[in-house]
Image (cartoon, rainbow, N blue to C red; front, top):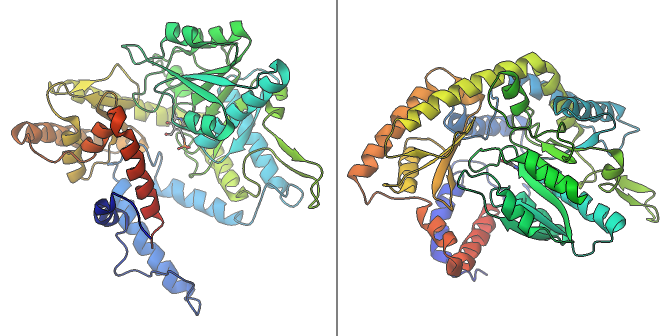
Length: 465
Ligand SMILES: Cc1ncc(COP(=O)(O)O)c(C=O)c1O
């Protein structure tokens, strides 16, 4: 029974979310007889080729960070070789344990961790963040007797921190960013209470790509004897190389003594397939608060370092393979190509007078407009097959530059299409504005409940056959 007051929206949602209802194998129950492998593989090839066209040519923001055919083929071979492995059974697959230990060690070294630093491999940025926040909660409960824990994060820190707060019963205190879109130090200091267990800064935050003042924030945390988490999910595998190339990278890693944990996503600029990230801690004592151990379960002694029980060892194998096939020289070359492309695109955006680039970011390029509806511009770009990310408070969009955009002609095509989109919206002030109205509703406090209902419905539709 569907009781949603927003039922009218369902057909539109289904149109974009369910394009394969006709002409493709579809099952609402198990087929009575198994389908031949060849037929399934043909179906998979069809789906892959349709969807590959969306990102292969570099028209999507973020999403696929490497994407070269030879790299993908190599990763897929490694995945296939280890598809049966499960790190939960370290006795059967010690290779997975080896891969994960080395992934953690290589990431820690890259982020200048001191001797004694440690970490775990997780399923993605969100899990790394969830685990770091759970770790601080349990650490503060045991060592500081804090039972009503609070964390402080700038408004721009990833929503995964809110998820962690919700899941683990932590109060989230959001503080505004300054005019420069960096965390406001004074606001952070003013929000501290005796229950604060950790502060958060991002290198960089997802929305505008401008690295927070991690040095000052982490000193504030150190002076209070609380944790400081650098969210390097997005920049952890790019900023170290950007720094080596001479780009202005504010300090964010373990060289800052107040930084007690860092998340860095191997499945973004680490160029591993989707499904891995690393969470690092300054010392092993902190990591102990992340672990789960059950000693009285009839199923045996049960323990796991991260949220999942059984896990895909193949993803750790593929992640390890991505790291070592790239090597330091490969990461440096990739960073150089990405940053040079981003510089070119930034310049192009700055030359379009109707648009304003937000700050001076390195590779996540956010821009808005004082004169046009930026969501109309985004919608026009969507019509030209560009997948940009919409942002709100303030209204803006961003392009997260990856290796896909470093292919010849992509930056030039992006700027040419953006120019055309601006001219189009200027001449057609009533052009559709896509996600604009929904972001407008989300910005109005009294309408947020409605937006939540629409998003619930959206997620329900995802699971409709
Ligand atoms: C800064 C930052 N933190 C955390 C995340 C969450 O990562 P994931 O989507 O892998 O869970 C992202 C994702 O884009 C991010 O940009």
